[in-house]
Length: 147
Image (cartoon, rainbow, N blue to C red; front, side, top):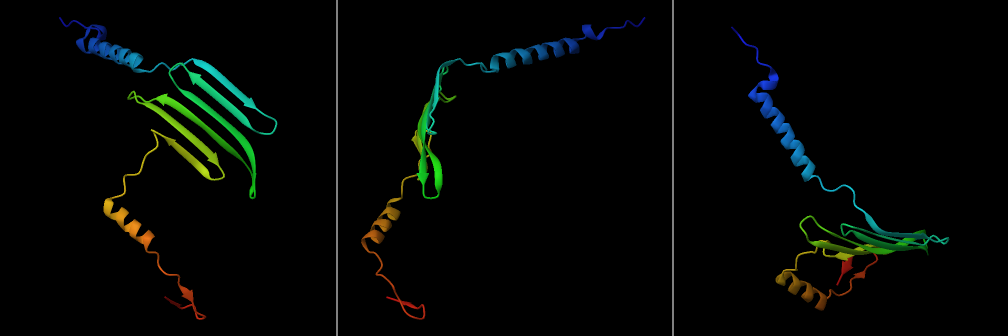
């Protein structure tokens, strides 16, 4: 006589349950803590448009910025400077300081990529060009140049 075996009792179903349970267990422990306490926060906005703010979290993130309104020939704008720091997933402390004003955005810190050194022959050529500038060119009436 044929005996019906329920799906609950099959080895495949038990493996399926074990696999789902394992995935959920790994996912639970693999997710980083999504809630990080803020240890301190300060922000001030002044009537003239200047401001400053800062905060620090329990996982080591820290940021501070201050800005002022500036009048420039092309209109008004905000000049700001500040920094932030945190720890990268690799464990390396990252810090970046920046200034943003009429001269653009300038950043410095260990997270800012640095250009490779100039090869010695190129450096020598640049020094020679600087020491031997070309003579000024004079313009003729018919837009011809001579030296």
